[in-house]
Image (cartoon, rainbow, N blue to C red; front, side, top):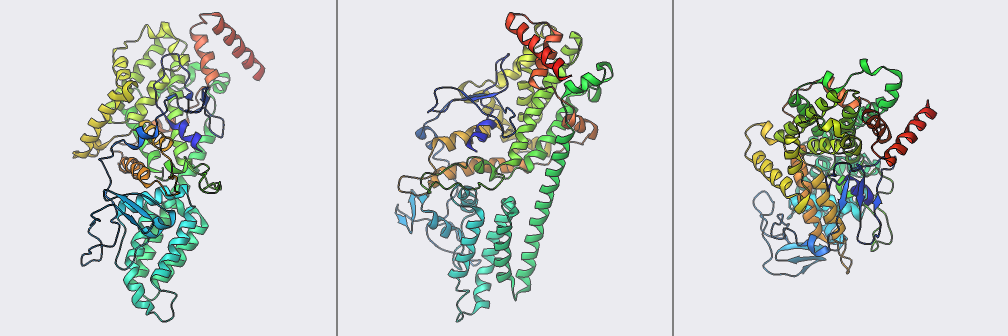
Length: 536
């Protein structure tokens, strides 16, 4: 599944004339590798440069997340720690700290550090970081089982001599808080029946005999079930949308082009189209679980007895659906440009999408912006020199400058920092929009590939996962933003279901619009036409 994350990378904008497939060279590889999904679809584009461990792990070391203190220190009247730290470096029951930061630990010690006691509750940043990273080493249902056993054992709930009512009242609020954070932040873990079984057993033990805790458990469970139901409905809707999409070439053979719809007949206002693209982006972002960024990396851990976690789970289905949307938008843009017979019409469509891309940039929808530019840079579109000769490209050149991949996307990252600052100080939801995905995936991929999950002594490399968690937390902030624009169902329906050309169909349409310029193009044109005739 590590390959799949490589597919998500939008590392480098293609030059005009480039194919939209993704190329990656890993350190150990002597030739380029082209990644595809399980269904065989090519995803994303770009060239991936390898970063060394030192380059990755030393990034932003001074910018640390708050750490859980290495011992149950001082507590207020509510029983929660005040984040006091040890004053010197030392090992602490299987955990290693450096400059008061947790940097590594055995898996068992990290699990024990997750479980609250009467006098201790873990820092929320530790909970998030451990829950998101632990799945690289242990299945969530196995982790839940261990948490349940620790909760029972530590509080002597199985000891017949203990005052079980008093013990439960002491620990129940903290265990319930931990379970609430788990179910709210990682609800997809609980699609596993084994997870739900352990959750029910533990919450039943905590809530028995106390009405207050019973209501809290009921509320937590209902919230979880609502989220899982909504996810199922979303997946069903996606499946329905995907089943209705066909190749535009098939449509062209049965329906005269003069009576076909195109994007300009559906929406002629670039700002409105940018708004509707933002609706789709935010909706698909909202269903991606933070754990999917890690699960997509799951591979054989040589220090874990060749065990593969999540071999029986869909690892990143919502992440993949989001990538498929990016690819669909790129191909839709290319299709809309290549489809018109008249050069003047094609030029109008190109200028329209340039305006849409500019509005996406102004809104803060950087992912749609990148997808649109990708579509316009695809070879079947970029080769239409006569068409581009009719286009005022000044605005497009400015947008391409913003997407310039040099210096690790310096221009793009500068624009993102400005958008991020604007969202922090924003007074309206429109100012809070900051949809950027490709660079997030790129940075997470480099972090994962550049640093080992475990150290040579077998400890979990927790310093790596602090950095990973910080990046995923940025995503968690983006996905919570609600789209401030009105929905236009007609436009949304077209964007999601309008048939698009395959890559071969794009080339064929391009050659039909502007004839082949060399022998290679002539040979390909003949081959494509012959293939089309055979299919009919």
